[in-house]
Amino acid sequence: MLLRSLLTRLERRPDAVPADVRERFEAHWRLLERAEAQHPRAVRDTLGYPSVGTWLTRALTAPDGDALARCLGHLGPLAAAAALRAGGRFALDLPAPAGRLVLPATGLVETGASVLRLTAHGRSAHLTAGGRRTGPVLLRLPGRVLGAGTGWRGLRRLPGSAACLDDLDPYRAPAEGVGSAALLAASPAETGGEPWGQRWRGALALLRAVDRARAAEVTALLRCVVPLARPAASPGGAGPKVSATFRAAPGAVFATLPETAADLAEVLVHETQHSKLSVLHDLLPLHGAGPREAYRVAWRPDPRPFAGVLQGTYAHLALADFWARAALRRPLPAAARRGAGTRRDSYLQQVAEALPILLESAELTAAGREFVTGMHRHLAALARSGERPVAIGAMSPFGDVR
Image (cartoon, rainbow, N blue to C red; front, side):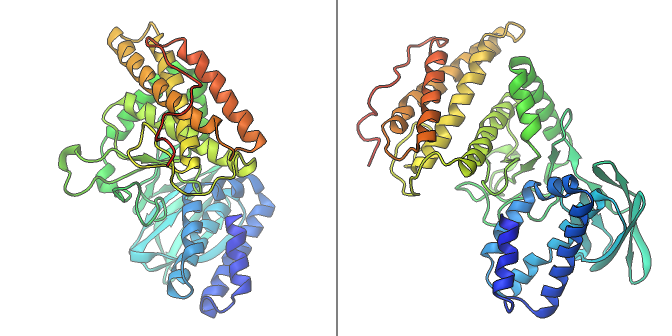
């Protein structure tokens, strides 16, 4: 829908960008159409990569002129990445700002040339600049594209999953930053070494030990983790701990490096719930509330809009469920089980305080009321596993609504 909206904008405002920019955009669009006719699944999978949604959001909000023209240039690398995966022959001139060409969901080519011609045929593709062969050779495998040679840097796969650590794509994170601290995407220099891989392996092992179904859900839905840079004034790993998802980029988790594998497991469970609920609400609206901030919740110091209360309650209910399971898992060390029980009880209390806001609301649709009622039943079942009694279903505390 976002891609169609961009095309509609250009059709309705033909003077939004110079004629040569529009012509290149149309040529790239035609390549995307041909690739889709040849291999729809490969193209859909490429378009579904989270950074594509972030790019489209930026393009749709860019003013006419140079800002929009710069955004439109990214359709070429996107169409090339899709066509490489789809198979078939093609040749395309692509811009390479600062001598770097990023292929979404694939990797980065660095040659120093400002314009590269990508020629694909058979099982490989090569690059030329000024008529001369340059850079790596791209190998076209079923469902994947790999690079071989100087100047290639592929996205790093996260072990045991199809997800990757994306520290390359220029549109991997919103331009305004993430969270109240407006953290920017970390550079490859900041994500080198093994910390992310080690945390990921530990988090996935914990998820699989505690709840294999939830581990399968995370690995099935997650396309990439986007590391966030810590502020320059916070050396040595200090500073705000941030994680987030964005509606336009389902399948991406944005996060600073968690201190432990258990913390990363919590982030993955939490943010996967946000992505799921955003997609569900797009397909089947759960409420009709506006964006006004009105409600106090235990997990945030600032008032939240109704949508934020629903999202937070759903995510924290999943965390209560996860840690309730971990508290009962005998293979885990006793100290880990005690820590899990503490986290479980904390999240149970937070959800119990927030759920009445939803249950009492007139903003829910019929589907939303059925959904929230299901959350209430699940919380009641989880509360019986806690060490401390949790009051559920009472009126929301005075002062919650302002």
